[in-house]
Image 1: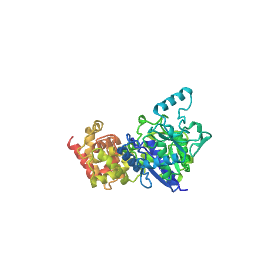
Image 2 (image 1 turned 90 degrees about the horizontal axis):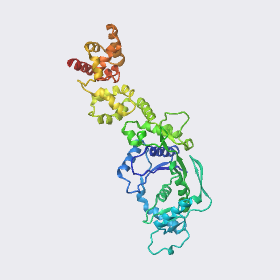
Image 3 (image 1 turned 45 degrees about the horizontal axis):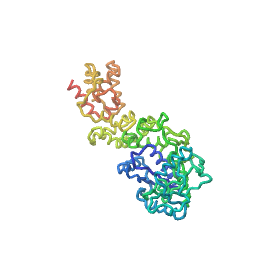
Image 4 (image 1 turned 90 degrees about the vertical axis):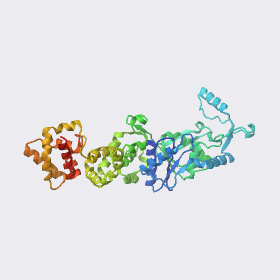
Length: 468
């Protein structure tokens, strides 16, 4: 059997990080088995579904690299097929027309509640002749569920789960206006798409028992179900906005690396020994539903930041810069020219060493893009007193003698000067840092000078001295 999985989000809002984790597990399971991973947009709720949400879902999945096989299926386009299946069940006696009025249904629920019974439909039209209804009376189509025995789901994550059939009422397949219900549409679409494994959040576990009735009534094989635990915040409460970013686009826009979000979501409820840093290729090779935990997992945004920092440091300088350029532009900087681009690439090892996100990279990049004369922060200006300015005057000469312009040579020249003048290193490094960056919290002075090159370094020193 060839494995086929699917991710089926509703386009009624942003792409929740929990939904992305569900998509990831479906994608990995399919890729691990050499099968297919499909995407279906469940857009039947026309009042709440929006094109903006569809676009956000597609963009979020693309950013995560969760490429679907084949065209995206839109559930709203398949209503005729859903109706046809319901009518086929009606024709073979596996479903029936129900003419109960809204008032009768309400009274039915109230009576059941008062008696402590299941408030589901009581089956009053299950065995009645439709001819008993008045002409033209509206009706729904309900599935005829078994009344005895039990329904068992051998869930590949949760294990064996059983519900007595007496707890499952004859639920609606087609509403009075002919529109298909969610339960029917999901089952028909999964069957027609050839889905072999339905992997989704465990909040859908109860739905599986009802959907099993539809599969049985239609004479179809039941897919394997795998209900994965929900994601909670670091404090154990249901994940919400107070825990930080809950939409995948928020992580993207805040500059977290895609690899970090992928890795963090992978480790939410799934593990491979003690491995924490797991590549995409390793994830495909190792992933299996047997290793998914049954309990809820906790998302710690700080861990995502740590992973992002790891992947950022491991990335080639040119690749890191290319990813950071949109964030640099968003920070207000013009697109860097060839010289500035080369300078930033030289600076990348220093920048990423102090960054966790691409937003951090953009913030640090300003030290390498600003042209003299630069704005100098108050703390940095304190280093530019008379003694500091005297050091800067000497720096023009000292740095001009550095032949091999690299960090080691620059550092050696500064240390030799400090020793000759019997100065503490801070008395040499701090004025130069202030002149080059305008701040005390910045990349190291030798790293900045190296990235600047000798000419720009001298320009920054000269600008401070000229305006002293």
